[in-house]
Length: 238
Image (tube, rainbow, N blue to C red; front, side, top):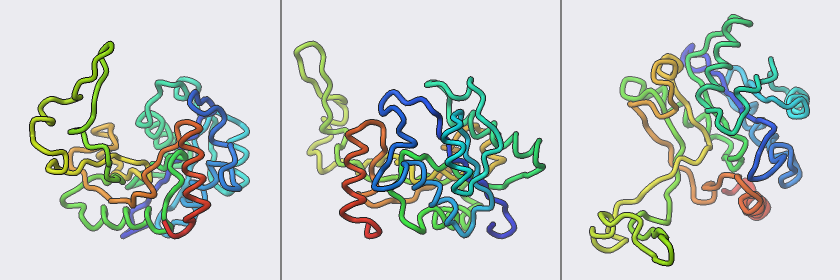
């Protein structure tokens, strides 16, 4: 809690994964992948409740054993390849309010696929958002992308073309502005705004810059191996 504002962290972890089957329970550097995110959430000084939303009993049991709230098994229609994180989190907010009479001011989305979090990242993001509430309703973690759009290409048949001719015409690649990707260290948004705009990218949005070593999301085995390598070599010194 911060300034009497109650904070919910939601960890989404469905069973199905085409890119890396069973990834949420796959052992990463000595722990199931999802455990890294659960431990981060439970280690926060500001988060009041951590809820794991999953359609898998194995993942649910793992979460319960680690100390998070697993109040339901997620409905199947919210656990498909096309299910949105927005709908999953809205379902969680509604359930917690209707079944437990718990109402929250901020919601934090913590994706298990982004385990490279520093100890204070989430709380620092909460502090930043709360201290600038007059200007912003949400905050997203971002990392600088080395592959600037000015150099990207597209393939059409046997031909290679600039992906964006307009950006290519702006001069040297290094003269273009830096670009950033929303790596999932955390997405935090005011609940009232989230319900209204139904987005983790509200109109009034600020950012939290992460280090280059945190700029990974685990979608396939290549990502998994790279993240494990980072953990083994850098650990707490990210």
